[in-house]
Image: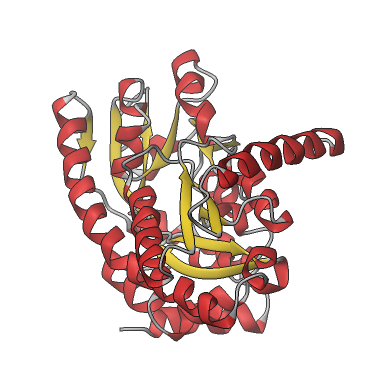
Amino acid sequence: MSIFRKLTTSIALATMLAGAATAVSAQEIMLRSSDTHPDGYPTVEAVKYMGELIKERTDGRIGIEVYHSAQLGEEKDTIEQTQFGVIDLNRVSMGPFNNIVEETQVVSLPYIFRSIDHMHKVMDGPIGDEILAAFEPHGLVGLAYYDGGARSFYNSEKPIKSIDDLKGLKFRVMQSDIFVDMVNALGGNATPMPYGEVYSSIQTGVIEGAENNWPSFESSKHFEVAKHYTLDEHLIVPEVLVMSKQSWDKLSAEDQEIVRTAAKESVAKMRELWAAREAESEKLVREAGVEVVKDIDKQPFIDAMKPVYEKYVTNEKLQDLVARIQATE
């Protein structure tokens, strides 16, 4: 994005959001939160729930307005806006942070987590808190982790039943070097692009497929153009809720604690909604006639990730982080 476009976007967003904030005169502070997912999605509803808790505990002084459906832009651009303080809160996938916060690379590694439960134990504990703290030097305050489910490959061409079936297929990935290298290591052709461009790109043959979880596969309608979904579950990547450091610093210590606690409490709500949404999305996708490949030998996929780990786990700090995650029972 050019400097002119960034400036124009910042001014436009600031004008729009300032107008939204002044419209709520009953509250002294209206925090503006961004999410690329549609209204009703578990992450969107979790932040709304967080806002209700904050409103109640501050006697209406602080509230949250959630701008869902990428109203404020795609994730990469909203990260910059959050760092600038134009956006107060932001729910973002971990991938776009990989080139900003080094520690996020580890939890974005393929097969770093053995299961969803393993991921929860790691991210709910001291390792998770350590990674949240790593956001602060980059103008962001890490508040909580939400679930992103298990990501798997889908495409418009054929069922993927082994690693060999990936060869030559063009897959959209998030704008993250790790995701690019992961797909390339599996023999596919990685194509970074914004989430909003995936449907038309599969439809027109620019790419053959992408990778994501059940709810995203369903809510994006990608299942309409990609009729083959393979549950290889190569990534179990948590999503993160961050706050602008500029916005955070404007709050009193007491209000900061209220915001942080409400964010943590919203996690259980999100997971409850996520489990229900995941089951519903799977049902809808299967009823739409998508071929789902469930029984697949994951070991060749795991073995192919060795060069990815060697490339990104390059210093003692990251090596120690990987070892502690793998040792978590």
